[in-house]
Image (tube, rainbow, N blue to C red; front, side, top):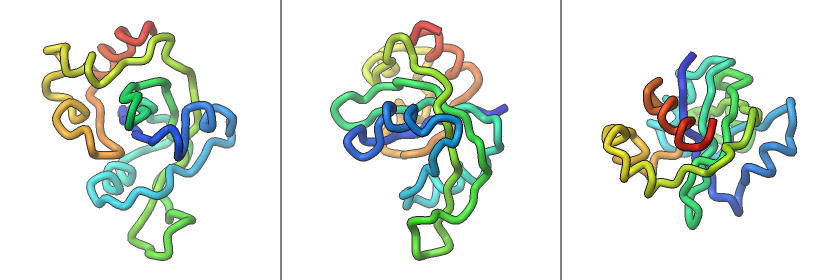
Amino acid sequence: MAYWLFKSEPNTWSWDQQVARGAAGEEWDGVRNYQARNNMRAMKPGDRGFFYHSLSEKAVVGIVEVIAEAHPDSKADDPRWECVDIKAVQPLPRPVTLEMCKADPRLADMVLVNNSRLSVQPVTDEEWRIICEMGGL
């Protein structure tokens, strides 16, 4: 299993909206960055990801699971753009902020800490364990 981080502006697509989709999940559409798209192409069903609220909150708020491999983005006119489908698994009891991640030396090499603008990014096994621990899991 691989781990990932999915960033969303809460006013565009929030954790609560993701949870409301239930087991059917939702297409992680609208990504228009080649690196983020390529990260989604590497995903397999069963992979887990952090759901991250960007903008004002800047925090990991939940855990999602990839439920469908990369496929054409239904909202794109250009076939270059693909997405995966994800479903909510569970919220973090305590949100883990970007500030908290930057303050923890164990996360110094994390993509989120060094390239917080990338909307879909890999997370190492160790980073996953640390953030889950920080979030109360």
